Image (tube, rainbow, N blue to C red):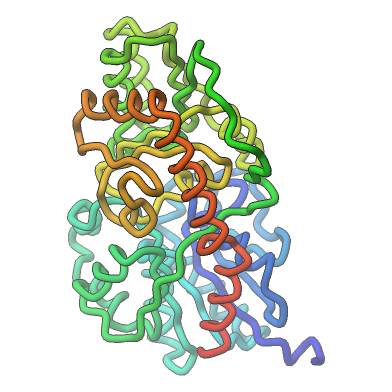
Length: 372
């Protein structure tokens, strides 16, 4: 196929590497594995030191804005200008918005200009739908239009698929989850016996209210053995959570590791005895899947997309929302029952290998691209 005939896909995303969240990881892992397409991306600059144009793996990245957080709000406007000029040269066969946020608004504006170009929307949202609508504020009408005007929706969980229908989507919707790189988060091991001193309880999450990190810290009051709670991530609640740790006299028990390079997370998972995230809401929760791939038993709340992969007492344990005492009970149960622990680890591993590898996710996404 001559290069000018390779179908070109234009991606609209609020942020991209080196700024990383689950959505950015998903785009990278999918585009790394798909051949036969060329990918360009328009994203907000957000940080001054980032280049306006660069190639990251398989994506030509174009950043718009001035290098501040406000660039996200400018993306639907500056991004449209950039998209129109790129389309003249590149003749896109598909546009792909990552999340119904700033990239979604840009997709909507582009669709109005070029109604003949198919538009794919990916839903990766982790915040509660009512909170998202509150943030949208006066732009609510246009926000609903994102769901009504798109040609195809890929949602990472059944929860988000149902949300799209509630928002008025009439187009086809397919659930394709996020995945795990099994070469990085691998676990070719026998289930190891617990070392009974200083058991490690791990959470990997943005330090924001919806991820329930405060509840995990409070659970530390109810644990009567030697333990360390390892918290990886940063966010607006960091100071508040450190103050809470101090107030509960848990400073020697709770370790804040800050942001860790995504690929370096594997060693934290593999040294953990249990993974806990007591989310108040969740689109899917990629870190649960990474923990399962690394052979760590998981504890989670039955909210959002978590119920797609966690079957209580088979692939993990459910704890109650907003209940630190129940979190502590579930931690004790996993660490005190070798048979249960082994069952959760083996079932979790098998589930991830069957359903949640990036190779299988990329294959499904390639089918969607070809269809559109």
